[in-house]
Amino acid sequence: MKTIIKGSDFADTDLSFSVCSHLKPILDYLVELGNTYETGKPLKRERFGSSVLQVNKSIDMTAVRDKFIIPTFIVLDDTRGRIFCDRCWCEISALTTNLEQK
Image 1 (tube, rainbow, N blue to C red):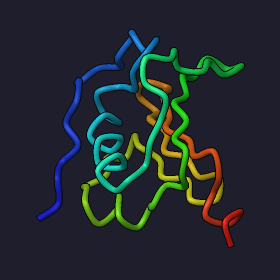
Image 2 (cartoon, rainbow, N blue to C red):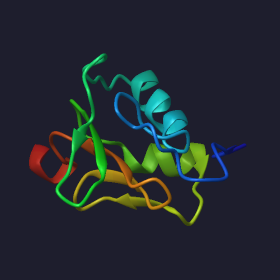
Image 3 (cartoon, rainbow, N blue to C red):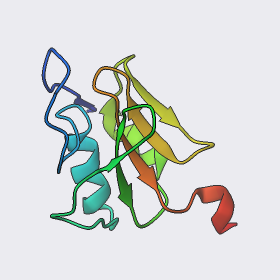
Image 4 (spheres, rainbow, N blue to C red):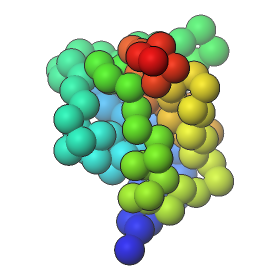
């Protein structure tokens, strides 16, 4: 059975040190799968206002799709190796993509 992404009904506003409530279950799952990131470090702020947490390994998008029911406001971008929340302008981004590892 797939896990439903819940999180806030609204956009999360404090994204200084943590991903939004919508992406948190996905981040926790990526860590369960062996991915890592620097804890205690502020999220990177992009030019257009999004907050980015970079994980050290590629993101297994197939595993994420198999584990979760993905709402329409979360975008799984296989090509760029990122998961983006349109509601909060928050993303999880891989330092390397699956394409770079081949």
